[in-house]
Amino acid sequence: MKKVHVIRRERFNAAHRLFNPNWSNEKNEAIFGKCANKNWHGHNYTLFVNVVGEVDEETGYVIDLKKLSEIIKVRIIDKMDHKNLNLEVDFMNDKITTAENIAIKIYEELEKDIQSTGNNLYSVKLYETENNYVEYYGK
Ligand code: NI
Image 1 (tube, rainbow, N blue to C red):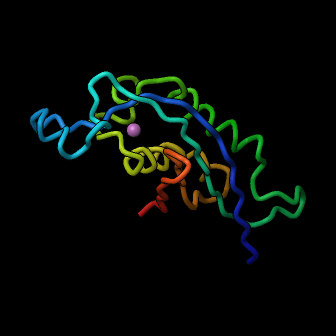
Image 2 (tube, rainbow, N blue to C red):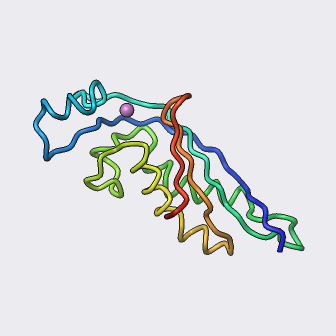
């Protein structure tokens, strides 16, 4: 079986703050520093969605990138772009909005729709800044 990875890049901008409600303000500031700023701050996130599957004989595709882009748009971009990740994104629930937690949640949001195309979601890579990114492989 020849498996090929297909990767789609998407970008979104969002506001957040890192804050653990179980801690005092002092402890939040000690752990998270300026990321705990109560008046929020923002990032230009870059997301890489990595799908793996076999090449279809008839189309030559693993997954139609138009379809992959549409799945990411509906499930992620429409819900996160220009939003406050702590307040406005239902699937972030009460999670601390670190890149780690955002990547896990994005993976979980996308998994079913991508499986329904006959492929598998391999990984989600999320850049929070040019120098810092996280990757989640579903386990
Ligand atoms: Ni931040």
